[in-house]
Image 1 (spheres, rainbow, N blue to C red):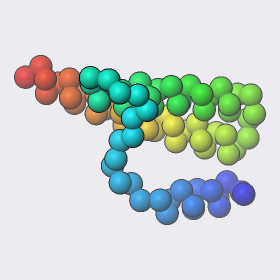
Image 2: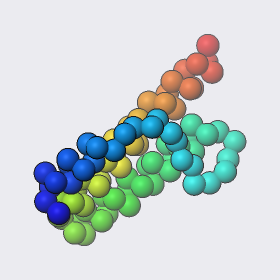
Image 3: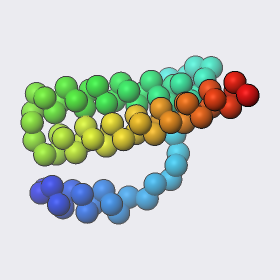
Image 4: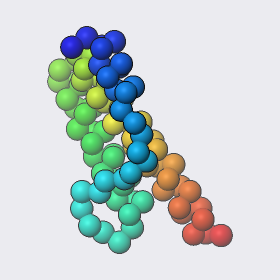
Length: 82
């Protein structure tokens, strides 16, 4: 699959704004960020080991999810401080 084809396919996926957690803990927003960070690290290592456009796109998608989770965590912690 070419990079433009993969991008087109990913653009068709609707953002449901759902958060999927892999391990139970007390703070869901922290868990979402920790899971996303772990996925980003795995995707980055895969891209470094296999520098293909598909691996890079997967890494960037993971990084975007981590950024969104970090923003959610900052908002949650900011609201808790009020």
